[in-house]
Image (tube, rainbow, N blue to C red):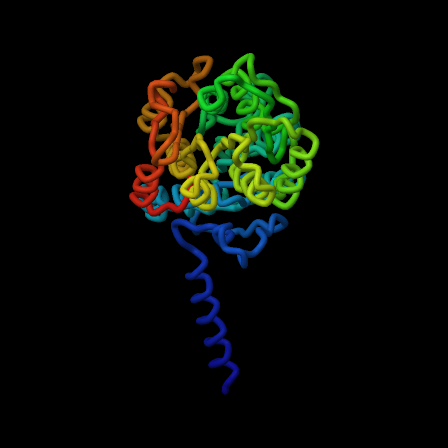
Length: 381
């Protein structure tokens, strides 16, 4: 083969590879429900060639199945909002519930020339370095919003344009209200979460205490660093230390399946109420088996979708969309976009009813919730 022909073949192969990498939407890791999915590489930030698509990044706090729905929402927005035609590539990059790695990502984004916007779920609201890096991105002209978990709003509100997600205090109250209805005489409870200093963790736990009321007492709040194996150890040890606990509360999405795994092993379901946030596929199956009393479910699909929508509007100076999404931006809470809550109960036998909860909370039985998931091609939320 001649040198000229070999060079031409290499150039052609390179162009084909480049074509496969560029697109409107993508997820940098496989869905977390697949046991063979690769770990996200948080040490590299790919850069598109000059003149090509600008990236809108969705950076998650971790790689739980919760974010499969978030990634689907971001990619749906990429398609429905014609991102590629407007010069944007939507990319979902999954974190590892690690502050240092999230910081490393943000620092690298600031040095990239092809990033136009970033939507991130903040790992630790009390770590001042994260909002500093977010502010640095804004100074570089990159639009920044938070989804799912916000910064400390008292000290770092200006580090992002807006927060899109659940009102976690309200969500916690609704879960506490459910616990109170399930167990009117109250009792001791244990909460389980990934990172205790994350804004959504603190807000949900505080809200739960408010909703549950005076008859309930928190005996432990255990963090696992985002590791499901540690989460299971925490449940077993908490039950060993607190034989009289009445309610186990899953604060992050994987905590509830971890709770149920151990409760099943210990055959202790009859003396415990189990309540939790989010609806991982395993949690949905457990509710169908009678192992879970209630789920307060967020809408990660809308977090991903609306996060991309707002970033695209900010980048393009589309004030009409910004005003539609945040009509009171500039007021005290005008930078908060609520993606809504659902409260899910088993199909039969639950003492809970819609009248117990806020008017904005959608009350659904399990089968109706499954129908909603099917409508959006989701397996969890």
